[in-house]
Length: 168
Image (cartoon, helix red, strand yellow):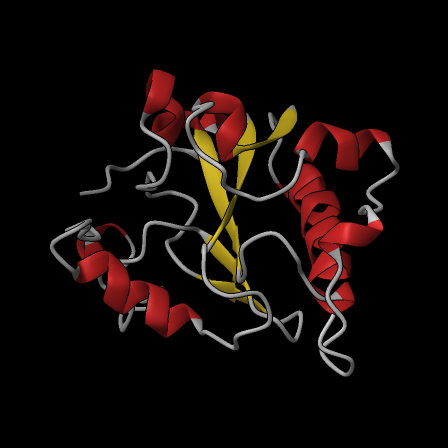
């Protein structure tokens, strides 16, 4: 269950992937359903923000970037996520999940860059963006090296781009 926090508590954004087949058009609602299952058993604390996405009762992420590039709100930022328990990350990080495993559409990459810039302006203490695998080396998620993406001016390597019109 999530707990209440202030926006000033948020110092990091952690990128995840849904670990689903690249290009499959899964939705935020699908993730919510998966997070309700016995493997995760996440439950939001809806009373913290009762009007914020009340139909998403289990999602552990704060934002999901679907394959068309649409950014969909999950948990409210004032509720801790259920995404990266290592070193107390859930307490001071927001979670962004990209639909796919290790290849994402150009629209998703553009949305990720836009979302990060927006978050830097919105969250006063946001200092870093990282991948789930930066906190847990046993994790493949998000399927790319976030530091490399940042150092490359928020441009992905070609092997991490899927063109759905051509299948690759």
